Every structure is written in structure tokens, then in C-alpha cells.
Image (cartoon, rainbow, N blue to C red; front, side, top):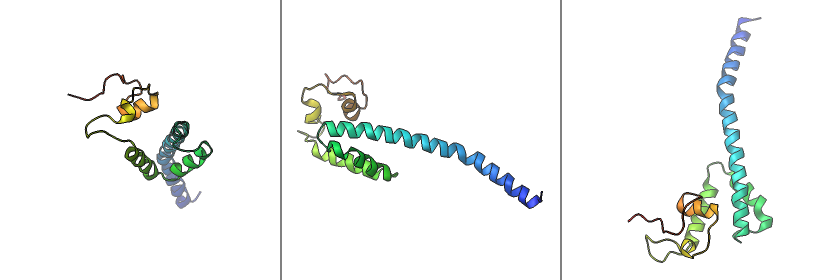
Length: 123
């Protein structure tokens, strides 16, 4: 075999050896993101924030933007829609006295198992 071709094959093998784990990791993260996006879209639809027949379109829209801009735009819109009595106090959604599901606890308190009987404020 020609030495030039042999060198090209060696470099190709090195490249594949280096990049394949990165590609696999990206694919795993992408699948986890899509799974979580479907879960969140279901919660948003159940809360009436998006229509049930718009779940797939919602997931497609946020999945198309890998930079996360669409997700952060949604978070910003949701945050603007939640009224707060005063700065530094808990939003009315969290203080309404109803039981929160794990996603709401995660979003509001940073822990899906948070104890919502106390405001979580540091004194």
C-alpha cells in the first residue's frame, strides 16, 4: 500500500477515535433534551399555557434552536406573566396554598422534593 494512503488512513482513524465519543455524548444529551422538552410541553399543555395539539410543534420549535434561545424566551415570558406582590417575595403562584407538582417545585424552589410549607427565603 502506498505510504501516502496509509498516512491518510491513520489520520482518519485517529480523527474518528477522537470525535466519535464527542458525537455520541452530543446525541445522548440531545435525546435527553428532547425527552425533557416533551415532558415540559405536556405540563404546559395541562396548565393551559399551550394547546394540547401544539405540543409537537412546541418541541420542534425549541429543539430546532440548539443555542437555547427559544427556551430562554419562553422562561422570560412565563416569568413576566407571574405576578409578584413585592420584590423579594414569593410569586402568587407559589403562595396560593395549592399543592405543587414536582416540576413546579423544581422551577420555583430548585428541588422537585422541596417542602412548600415554608417560603424558602433565607432570613
